[in-house]
Image (cartoon, rainbow, N blue to C red; front, side, top):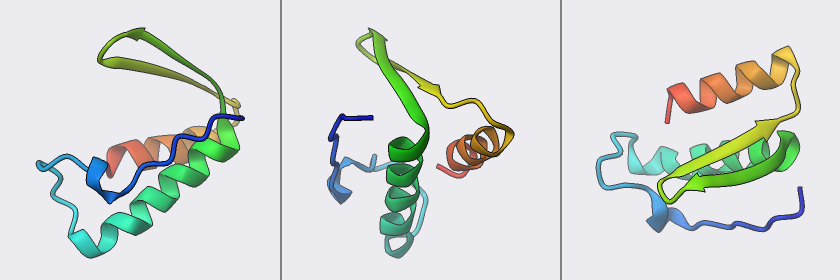
Amino acid sequence: MAHDLAFGPEWVPSACTLPTAERPLRVAEFDALFAEVVLTVQRPERERLRLALVLTPDNAARAGVAAASA
């Protein structure tokens, strides 16, 4: 995917319960996931984002684990 959507640590919501020291690792996980498996990005509504992923069992598991621990 050709989009460069770099986010710094300041994008993390204040309600995030992840310890601050672990946040860069989680951001890196999401960066890798988005760079490797996202095919398309759509924004159907202002506060909604739809990502189409390369469909494989491994990618589904990666996305599910990333979302569950976010």
